[in-house]
Length: 411
Image 1 (cartoon, helix red, strand yellow):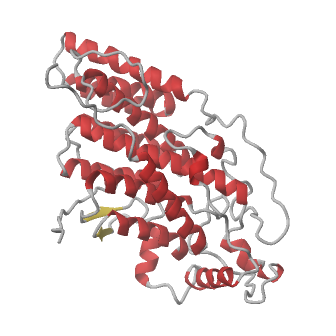
Image 2 (spheres, rainbow, N blue to C red):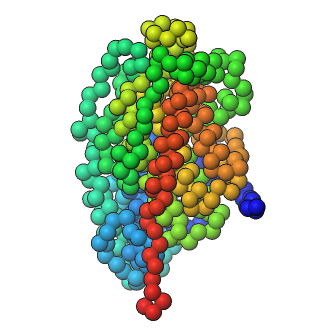
Image 3 (cartoon, rainbow, N blue to C red):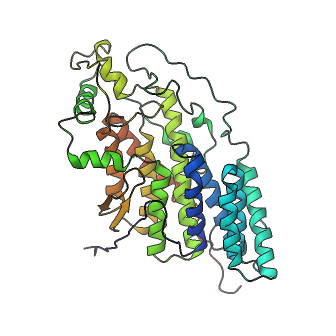
């Protein structure tokens, strides 16, 4: 019998509690910087978080090589201050990728440096951190995220075809699936596709979301409504918040913390890339379109409701797969690989302030995160199920990266 290890982890709504180690400090700074400029842009957040934590991880391992670096061939300096190096790398990445928040980022940088004694180690740390950050940014310069090559999305007619959803008149990030992944090979994580709109399984999914996900549902419970609102926030913010509290409560040193944040954010970033690749390959309609236009789907088991509205607003991207579910499962799988799935925690959400929810383990949180999209009326259950499955596979693949560096005892 495995003995169940119980931890109670409390997460602040907007990173309001001071972090202990410099890695978590800069994760906190990034989360605050996103709010005015990259809020409700989870794909942009995911890339920024991944580049930030790749730089932090590599900077620390350029000082003391405990884990394999993400970018090979970096300079080494064992005499550099770790705190100064982390601050310098983080400032450069964040001001480059979130330039509108330079004042906030620079203020954090000044505060962090003020706590480090002046001297050669501090100066060498700043130089090393900036060098590593520049190399990481350069590695991602041509990754396709600038959107210059985005195709123009034009809806097609016919049952199952994605149409723009209120209040939007566009489809977001149709080229994001072309962004170079941080860790995975996309072909190894392909999906089978959405259900046929003429199938009995589709009709069952249709009926469930029609009943439980409608704005004025009599089926959805008060707790299910809470779950829908609780998990509605941008996934990178929520799962970095959970990672942050686990890192603090487990008492990880900066090297361990840096690896944990890097792996979680590689998984999140690659989950979005894989998910968007599939979204615009299959172009499947959202429940609001499907339910209002069910008379055209050729399925005798579905009935249209032209006035149907979802509980939450549908994001302006196709239904399949649910990237929200995918991202949560990928992040959870990395955390399970790092810490096991025997951790109780309590977390909060920026989209439902004042409410906290408790979980037995990361798997339960990932499952509830996925279910929230059905309760919200914005995804079919099949999109959630396949998103969870794809996310778990991505998380397992990413968890194999950045292994420890074994050193001889005779060095």
